[in-house]
Length: 576
Image (cartoon, rainbow, N blue to C red):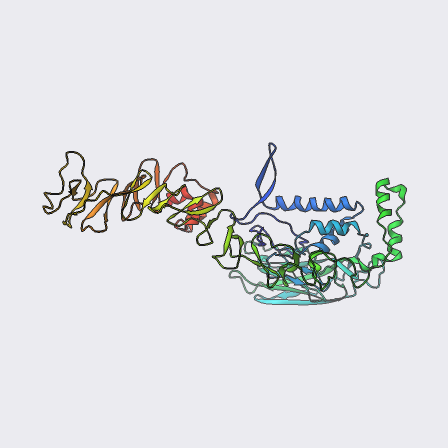
C-alpha cells in the first residue's frame, strides 16, 4: 500500500518475485488510471492494479532491450527491486546478498533502475535443471512436533549439462498423508541457511487427502550455490482435537534445482558468453534487432570495485554503484533503514520530514501528510479524509466543538466567538455559548431586565403581547418582558443563566424538537431529520459506505465511534 503495509488480500508466498503498489485499507489512497467514457478514476484496487503496473514496467525494459528473455527479466527484477519502505517482519539477506521477504519478494519494482540495467544487459547463461534423488524412506509426523529430514546434494556436478552451480528456482516435490493437512507448515532450509516457508498453516483447509506429488517453489535462494545439505521441516500443529492414533506421514520427497553452471553476471563478459550471444545470425532477426545487438556489445570485463559515476545525491564518501541506494553517505537526506534498505533523496516524500542534523528522512506522526517533527502536534498537512486543526497542528477525523470543517482545504477553522458549535461557516451556528440564544443560525444575547425575578421554582420565557408577566408569581420582580411557566414548551429547554436564580427556557437547535442540558444535545428531531449521537442530521446526507463493511461496524458495536459513524450513518441509525 502507499504506506508500505501489506494489503488485506495479500498471501505470503516463497515464490513471489517482486511487488508493485496497489490499494490497501479503506482510508488509504488507491491507484489513479484511465476509466470508461474517456474519464479517469482514482479508485482502482487490488491485484488488477499490480499486474498491469509490473507488465508496463517490463514493457519499458523490453523497449530498452528487445533481446531480453523471460529469464533475463526475472534476473533484472531480482537485481533492481528495492525493499525501501515496505514493512515486513521477515526481511532477510540470503546467501547471495539479496534481501527477500515472503510478503514482497525482492522488493518494490523500480522502473528507472530496471530500464537502465536493461540497456546494458547481456543474456544470462543457459538454464540447467537438476533433478535430485528421491527419498522414499517413510517418516511419521508427530502432532506438536517438527519433523526434520535432510539430503546432501551435489547439484548434478557429475552431469555437465545438468549441473546447477548458481540457483534461480528451487522446487520441493513431496507426498504426505495426513488427517487434516491444514495443520501442516512446511519449510525448506538451504545450505546457506536461508529458510523458505513453502506452506503456512491454513485453518480452513479440512482436507484429509494430504499431498500427492505436490510441488512447492521458492525463489528465496536466488543466486546461492546449490550444492550442500538441504533440510525439509514439517511442523504439525493441531487446530482441533484429532485422533492421536492417526498420524501424518511423509512418504517421499525430492528437490529440483533450476539455475546456471556459471555466474549469471560476472561471467557474462567472458569471450564464451559474447560468442554465444553473437552466434545468432543477423539474417535470422529483424534489421533493427540486429543493429541493436551490435550496438550493445560490451568488451570490458566487469571489475570487482565500482569506479563509475555516483548518483547526484551521493555524498563525499562515494558509492558502490550508480544508483541512489548504493551511496555510502548522502548530500541531503537518507530515506529508509538498514533493515528495509536506504537511498539518498534531495527532499523527503509525503509522510516524512527532513532531519537536517542527522541528514535523514524521519516518519511523521500517523495521519500527517507533512510535518515539522515526529509529534502529534507537529503536522502541517494531513492525509486524505483527515482535517488539519491549525491551532493545535494535529490531524483529526472530525473537527472538535468550536470549530467547523472547511472542506476545500480540509481544515478545522474556528467558529464565531458566540458559537459553541457551527457548520460550514464561522457564524453559521448550531449551538451557542452561555448568555446567547440561537436565532436561525445566529447567536444573540437575551433581553434580560436589570432586576431579575427571585422565584427558584419557575422558569422564565419571553412574554408575548397580551401575556401576563412574572408579577403574580414573583411580586418583587420587575420583568415586563418575561413570564413564569412550570415547564418549557416544545423546542426549548431549561438552563441556568448567569446572575439569575431562575432557570431560563432556551431554544434547542433548529432541527431539534426536544433537547436536554444544551441546545445541541437533541432528544428528538423534527421531520426530515434523524437523531445521531445527540445531533439531528438530514436523512438526505445520512449515507452509507460499503454495505458489508457497515454491517461489520454494526455487529461489532462500533457505531459509537465517530470515525465509523461518518461512513455508516444509516446502518448506525438502524442499530439504535
